[in-house]
Image (cartoon, rainbow, N blue to C red; front, side, top):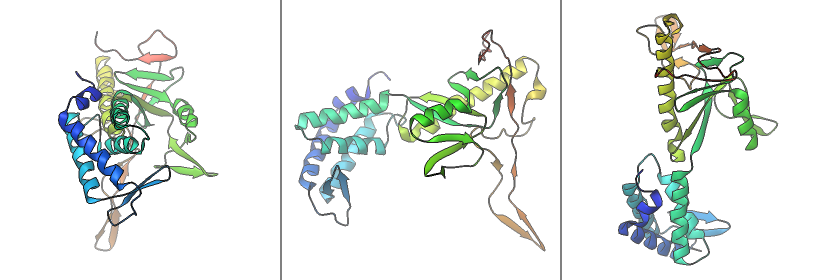
Length: 275
C-alpha cells in the first residue's frame, strides 16, 4: 500500500471531522442511562446510546471505509478503535492520536493463521513444507502456539471448539496450515485461503512436472476437496423415496504425502518449480 492507513485517515478532512463529531457525541452520552438504542460499557463506565451518537459512529465508520482497502479493516476494527479513543482519559488531540494509532496497528501487524490441513501429510524426516506464501507444519507447531495463549490443539477431526476440564481446545489432524497475512481480523481466513490454494496448485504442478500424475487427487473431472475441511458434504438433509430414506452423504478425502522432496536440507522442504 503506497500510503499507510494512519496517514490516509489523518489526511482526510472528512475523517477528522467525523472523528471530532463522534468524540463529542460520545462525551455527551457518557453516564446516560441505557435505553432502547443500547449501551456501551468500558472499564465500568457506561455510555447510553443516543440518536446523535449512533449517527456519528456510522458517519465515522463510513468515512474510514471509504479511505481504506476492505481487506485491511472492518467495521469491528473501527468500532474497537473509536471506543478506545472515546474511553481514553486525555485531551481530544491525544484521543484522536489513539484512534489513528490503533487503526495503524490493525493494518500493519501481520496475523498468523493456523488451520487443520486434511490434504497434505508430512512423512519423516520432513516436518515442514513451505510452498509460496503458505507453510505446512506438524500439529505440534500449532499446539505450541496455542498453548502460549492458554488453549490447546489435540489430535482429532471434530469441528469447532471443544472443552476438557474447563480448558478449550481444537482438534487438528497430523498437519496444519500456517499462513501470515496482513489483514483485518475479520478477513484473515479469506486472505489466508489465497496462498493456500496457490500452494495446492503449485504442489499439483510439481507432481505433473515430475511425471507423477498418478499421485494427483482427485482424478480428472472431479473437484478437489477443500483443504481446510474434513469432508465434502454433498448436501444436508434427507430424501424420502417411496419406502426408502436416503441421506446427503459425504466423501472421505485423499491426501498428498510429502517425503524427502526437492531440498538438500534434511528437515525443511520447499517446493520450487520455477527453474
